[in-house]
Length: 340
Image 1 (tube, rainbow, N blue to C red):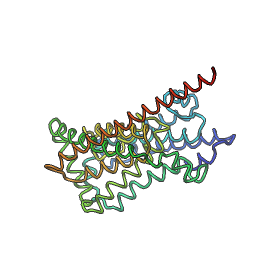
Image 2 (image 1 turned 30 degrees about the vertical axis):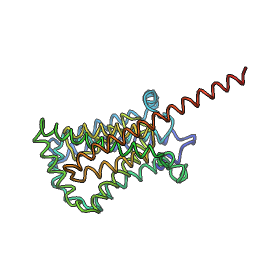
Image 3 (image 1 turned 135 degrees about the horizontal axis):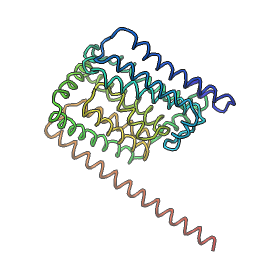
């Protein structure tokens, strides 16, 4: 990504784009090919995973072709001649393809049980690269200053109603999680038990105040900066939401993955109509709520506060739209009067 940013505007940038994209796609294909010829190493269906990697590499390789990128630019806000956009597309396809292959053909829940419980250091090492990739992708200190990079990523000072909307949405997502858990326990109880067992194993060591703070802040900040801040303005709402759901392999093939996708859509809409600062606030608040055990009046209180916050946000957006409409009408009338 650093190289792609550095060659923007150069006459030979298309050649570098082809090399970067082709090498990355080719490496993915070869990884699957080498693993396919090697001994099985644990997954339930290793051959299917390896073939999935190879198919992913082939699909990603098609993006080396400019006509293919031009077709995609009809549906995504990308510049087919931009090396950063081109490489981002290739990496997005690789991320989605490899994650889907792993989820579909690997017992990820059983595999996660073999991993030692996560520490704050593990969580930091897992999440921090997302933020690093985001700032590298937008060209920090290559073609943008820190202030310009932050602005491109949507890390701006929010309006008061942005925060109100973010907190209300966090409560709504938490309610959605309750509904998802109820549906999961009703229709897929065995999978639900496995998911809960895996989550308890992975995150059980983060139950203290510091661990809960890390679980709320690190994913909330780092994932939002990459997915909603860097990727969504280029890949669009739907593709970014699919990628976001795909990285949450700890849920396996379950109703929870669908819930994560719906939450990603919601976060994407907040990014579209507010900014990434608001989506970070929402994600952190949701993670905090999900980490706490709320019962009785506290549980009901979340519902009441959520409804109040969303109501205030809706009123603020309505007032803002009305003021903008009135201002626009006044400006049009003044312009017409000036012409006359």
